[in-house]
Length: 256
Image 1: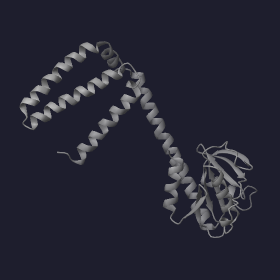
Image 2: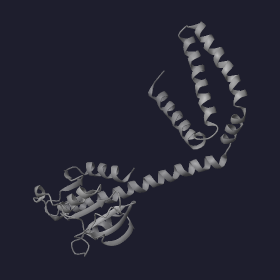
Image 3: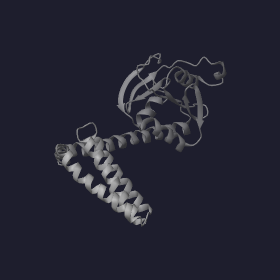
Image 4: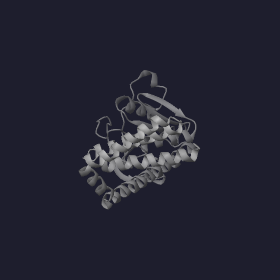
C-alpha cells in the first residue's frame, strides 16, 4: 500500500504544490486562504483516519467540524477565494513558471558542460605533465590577485584551456580565472604563500596556497613534475588521485 511508487507520487504532488505556493500564493492576500484550506484538509484526513481506526464517534465529530469549517471558509474568505481562482486561471503566470523552469534546466546543463570541458583538459594535462593553475574565485573584486592578466571572457572549452597552458604560449605560467561560467582571464599572477611549511611545493602550489590563504577562492593545480591534481582551499592543499573525485569537486563549485 505504501510502496515506493506511492511515495514518489506523493513527493511529486508536494513539489508541484510547493512551486505553486511560492510562485502565486506567498506574500499575497490569498495566503491566509491557502493556510485555511490546508488546515481544513488536515481535519478531513483526521476524520477518515479516526473512522479507519474504528473510532467512529470521534470520526463523526471531526467530520462534522470539518464540514462546518468548509461552509464557514466559503463565507469568510469569499473575496480571497475569487482572487485565488483568478490566480489558478492566470495563464501568463503559468507560462512564466514554465519558462523559468526551462531556463534553469538549460543553465544547469550549460554548467555541467563546462565541468566536463574542464575535466577533459585537466585529465589530459595530468597525463602529459602539463602544469596548470585554475582559480575559482568567490569574489572577483577582493583585490587579492596581484595581476589580473589578459582578459579572455570566453566560453569554457578544453581546447582553449589546453592552448592557454601549452608551454610555448606566453600565458602558460600564469593562472586562469574562471567565474560566471566563463574563462575570464589568463596569465594572472597570484600571491605566493609565505608559510615556511609550504616551501616543499613549487611556485604553482605556493601561488594556489597564497590565493586560498588570502581569499575564499578555490584553486586547482596540475603539477608539471608529477601530473598530480590538487585543490587549495582555506590555506590547505589536498591531492586528488581519482579523476571522478575531481569532477565531483568541480560540480560542487560550478553547479550551484
